[in-house]
Length: 223
Image (tube, rainbow, N blue to C red):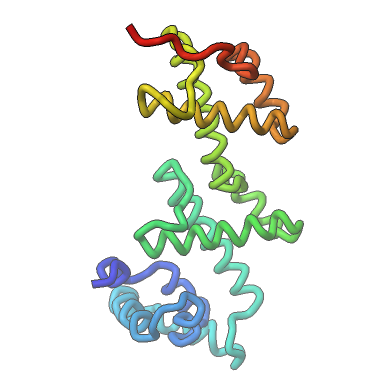
C-alpha cells in the first residue's frame, strides 16, 4: 500500500481542499490519481465535520478552476512552515531522491524557491521565513562535493603524518592509497591547467607542503 494511504489524511491536500480547491485540481497539482485524493479527503471530512463547509465557503466566491491569489499565498506560507518544521525536526534538508513521497515533494518545493531566489523573484515572505532553515539556498550536490574535498584533504594529511610517501594513483599498496593518489593527481592537474580554486591551493600548501611536486623518486624496493 502506498505510504500516503498509510498516513492519511495528507496535510497538504487537506489544506488545498480547505482553501477551495477541488479533488481533481489537487490531484493534477500533486500528480496522483483523483481517487487517492478522494480517499484522504474522505478521512479528513470524518475527522473534521467543519471541513466541507470551509471548502464550500472558500470555493463558492468564484467559479474559476484555481484558487484566488490570497488563498495561493496562504497555501504557500503554510507549505513553507511545513518545510521549516520538517527540517528543524530532522536537522537536515529534504532529499529529492527520498523513498518518501512527502519528502520528495518538499524537496521540489525548496528547489523551486532556490530558482526564484537565483532569478531575483523570490517573495520576501519566503526569504524572511526560510532563514530559519540553514543552508536551504545551497546546491546540495555542490555542498556534498565541498565536504568530500575537505574530508579527502584531512585523510591525506593523516596519511602523510603516518610516514607514508605521496600516494600514487596506480601500482598502489592499498585502496586508501589509490583513493588519495587519484584525488591528489586531480588537484595537481587542475593546478597546472589553472582550474584549481586558489583557496583550495592555499589549503593544500598549508596542510601538505610539497603536494605540487609529489614524489621525486620511485618507490624504494620492498624488503
